[in-house]
Image (tube, rainbow over the protein chains, first blue to last red):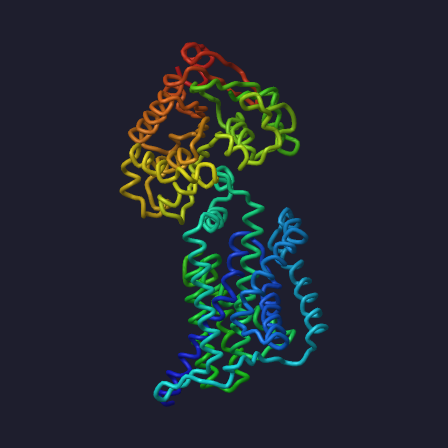
Length: 291
Length: 234
């Protein structure tokens, strides 16, 4: 093993990990704040990727520019889905189970809609700079990877600042920590749940676009992405943004290294072996829970 | 000011409140006493809009409160410090206080309110960056009271503010409540510290099994033989 290869795969792992983190942070929030395990979260991420693909294909919009269109669009779509589907089931006795079953169905619907619109063939995002790379000494970084990485950092930072610095973000944390007291001081739980859900779906969209800049994707890719979501959230602690970011990085690095040094068919085995080890020995994750 | 008329609340088959009527006048401090399970917390939570009553009516300055959500009740200036304090444990003291001023109407004055709360409880200013969950019971109760004051209450409802506190911390909290009332704030005080509570309030209600068993001026309640045997252990 030479040092250059190790460092190169470490860096790609970090880039990958940041993208996982952005894709997961919303999943973690809906889980923590609303007790909704949103199985179609990754499918919405994939929808973001396809929107970016079409906007690039037909209007020549760069994925980062088109994110400014598609992410707010996903926010609105998610508000509608919350009112129509999610809000009724939050009154169920077992919200977690009910939400998993409901959103599992939603994921299947979304997947088939994507097959209908975009066909089942794998797609790649090819912005104008797709073939370019930044070369620093013996290392090289493909431009799309750098852009995806940058978009992820931007997304994670934005959601962190939202939760820490804005009244609405603080209400999301308050509702998670102590829903009754939050209500007593004027927090409308339904409104906060809708915002949490819609924001989570939007960040999934941004994460999907970032991931599409790194990897190819097809309508069923969200199934694999979903397992990564669970892995990141379980390692990072439910509802913990910083924990999610760190967990994303750790998992990205592990995946990056195993991709470089292990036969391809072993990569997922390592990742999901890790998930099982975590579930057995540290089901609460490495970091504290809570936003 | 606050008027509760023939209020009934049910939890499934069980009736927690059975036709409770009571009143709080402007600037008055009213005691609500009674044993465990008498319905005191249920009454406060119903006024706050967390529980929907099965019957009866609630009104505030002549306007009905029935059917309003907790955030709308808070907007009216009816603010509760819940039992067990219920701070946001993973938020700092200052974040907890700021959340008290969450509603837009009071948000604009939050800087000024914050200064006022820190004046009343200098210890909270020292601990403003500390996580609320890591403080002592007395400090947590200060933070809970401070958070309620941030909401600019016109009626402050306190549920067992001295529960689990040292006698010194409890006396400090009661002292602060008395001062706030002297400054004109209406207070509805639920407490098991019956002697102390009846000493600082003007009127009182004794709740037993979901009904008002006794009511009257606090000085008279203190002398009532039933109160003496059941609540004062005399």
